[in-house]
Every structure is written in C-alpha cells, then in structure tokens.
Image (cartoon, rainbow, N blue to C red; front, top):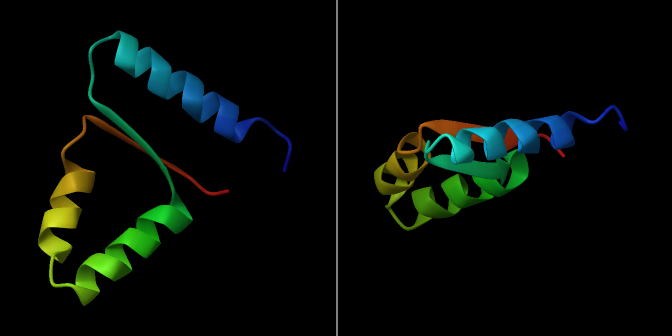
Amino acid sequence: PGTGKTFLAQCIALAACNANFKVLFTTAMDMINHLIAAEADHSLLKKLQHYQSPDLLVVDLC
C-alpha cells in the first residue's frame, strides 16, 4: 500500500483518454459484484461485452 499504483493507473487512463482511446476505470470488487449481479439476472453476456468494449480497461485492486 502507498506505492502509487492507483495514481499511476489513473495517469495512464487519462493519457489514453487524451489520445482519444475509450477507457473504463473500475475496481476489481465493483467489477466482480457487477458480474455476479449480471449472472443472477441473466445479462452476463451483455455485461461482459461492456467490459470488453473499451480500448483500455483499468482494473484497480483497492
């Protein structure tokens, strides 16, 4: 903790946005919770496509 991993990931994501790339930034826990909920309501494939659609997917482990 405290080594700046999240800050570095945010900087990379911002640089990608500035270069006109589509970026999605999320936490691992949020992504897992959304995928579990999507599986429960039978929309898992749609949610997986949501996570596959950006040019850059940044998953933070905090």
